[in-house]
Image (cartoon, rainbow, N blue to C red):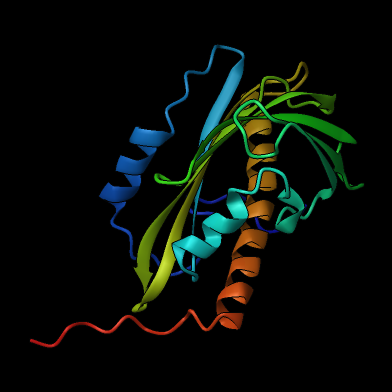
Length: 201
């Protein structure tokens, strides 16, 4: 697996978003109601790139391979970005999966929210649903982005809730690490990492 074990924030970017705001975002956008045989959690990370660049990657339900390292191929049914659209994802070797069929549940360009549900495929993530939100913030005087991804999923037979959550955390950590890398490269290429200057009174 890619990256280090899960921590309360997935990666160690300098934090500038108050904890109260993080809690507010989670309570507002990331409420799941897991049953007794499901686990649910959220992963947070801070990215040194403007929110519009990060969102331009996250929102592309039809092109998850732009930043998700384990996706080798994606074929979309429907218009690609309409609610209810399906995507057939081929998974690279190294994971206990080969394919995944996923449905777009929510796409909100104003609030920057993407909701996806896995509805089929060759894997163990049954009844998996995720929500990812992106929020503007300032990191060391530069435009940055707080990303929160939450999920709920069945606990497979033979596994514990802790094992299942750890596995999903690891996958999300890898995806968010890659999202941060790609977003930062885009920001550098577009010269969008200049400091935010405070107005002088």
